Image (cartoon, rainbow, N blue to C red; front, side, top):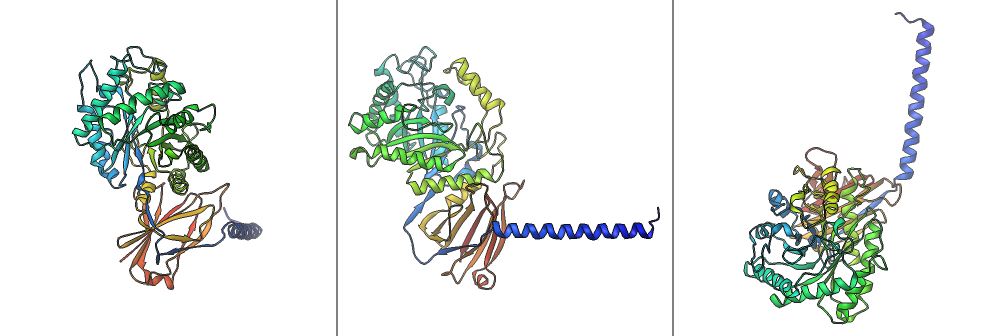
Length: 483
């Protein structure tokens, strides 16, 4: 079909009009971007130390799903994170006490040795309910049929670990004892009953190993539930009980799954305030040994979870949390046949959650695929050595910097407080005049090569071409400076 001159003219006007609209739209976007991107300069002072830092104490845990060593397939990858501790459930599927006065440690030892192979010390969470001592399956039955036999079992377990050189770091009494089976544990305690159970158990541990670190109560604080007050009285009861000298206490532990990092800070402050009431408890450690984003309403932006890991750990460090355990290492299917110590309702609940619903907990999914959160923990593991100051950070852009041997590592990110802003950020090292640097970006959406080298040059080049990035919400960068 042939166009007339009029048609050509009309087409030309429409084209010009479209171009004008496009130019005006781009200009408007640039104006908005300019307003939304206040320039910031992150200045890393490598000339003096702010003391020591070691973020590897914010480590890992593995869910209690099987007698198999669940981390076996990812031990080399986990080793690269240099975790100080890895938490493990000591549950009935290990069959440690199959019959009266008989002990079986083969499966248990394999699981613990897998942890030791990473270089980490185990935090063992005692959730045992042998049938010989608990013949009735009921989460509200929390006392064994014989305290003497229970204590003998615990002593035997601790003695075995010492004799086998398993190097246990911490002994934790119970798991999510305030909610019972919904938390995967076989116990649902009232405060006074937990104090009795705790005292019998830790006394047996200390008889077998006077230097063992003991604690609890491993509370669940899901869905913004208050850590203090009438909804969670077990914690306050345990602190009062031990503060008055009725039982030893080396650490307080609890869990939180929430997508708001400020709530983690709040709970750390609450626990520390409770411990401060007793001079005898001033050295008690605080361990948040299960944590992740919300389970019921997870944020599905692939950039969110890695940034959430960094932002929440930043709060751990600032609030003085002793240790943590990101939950968890590897997603695993729930096998109902292994959980006969739970009621049918408890089995069905866990079966549905872990086998039917999609879950986003593990650093590795059920197929062994690595999630981007792994790389956030990898970056945190580099924060070991001398702590260095970073100037220019704020409420949304934060970072860590450390010197370890011949390298300086800097990790910085943008964690929005509301709708979020995009920042034009410059990173400078005014006291570094030699060596080279690499700028690396975490790309959670890439199917391979999630860590992308953006720039690699001599430090001398920074005078002519400063290190600049456009830092979008939830975006993460890592800079390494070395010889």
